Image 1 (spheres, rainbow, N blue to C red):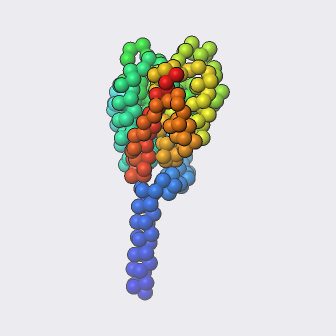
Image 2: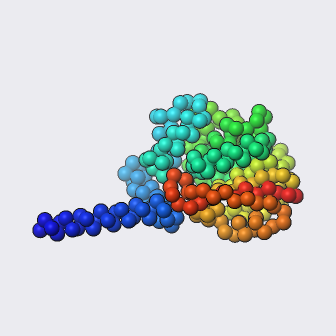
Image 3: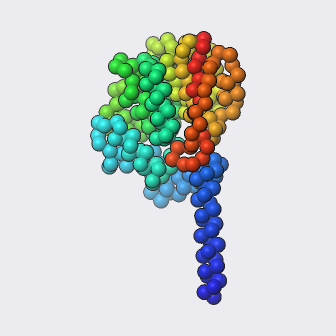
Length: 259
């Protein structure tokens, strides 16, 4: 009897170890495990949502008015407690570098989620710069607003709630912006290509505008990559990386619009 119990326990340990390894190294397993399994269990058990849990952690552990402290708190929570699809600390360094190199006055972010990448961008912008971020989910947007306020950067961010497809054509008239110097793309992957073409059609890009797209490998945006790498209107560069807080292959694509 004891031998049977030990055998079953050993098998369960092996299965659990295999699952953990696959989750940490395989894209499909990682996304299924974190977004379709663990998140739903935590939501049920706590009666909250992952964005709210991130906000609560920030309010408990970060220094109010200190954007870097808030960023660090989110990284700590998402790497040690509960994974979330922010751009993350490693790819975030690539984003930081692009912002510092570009020194943009007008920035558009597609996909706010909880505001992590928005904070990374906002804290590095020169005085007088404008950062517009678009989020389709009202709940995510409300959490992001509270995080911006806690970090002390709410005055530097203009958050629009709604579909990027609907809002992009309204940006010139709505916000009196002619062109964007930097566009950070991190929303629905199927929207990467149509929204890029929409930016072109609406005349929101100029020669030298930089597009930086996250998660082009995981979950992946193959149609966007095919277009951006083969269109003569862009000069593109790929930065290999890993999916935020995991060991799964991912990367970001930087593309300069040539006019």
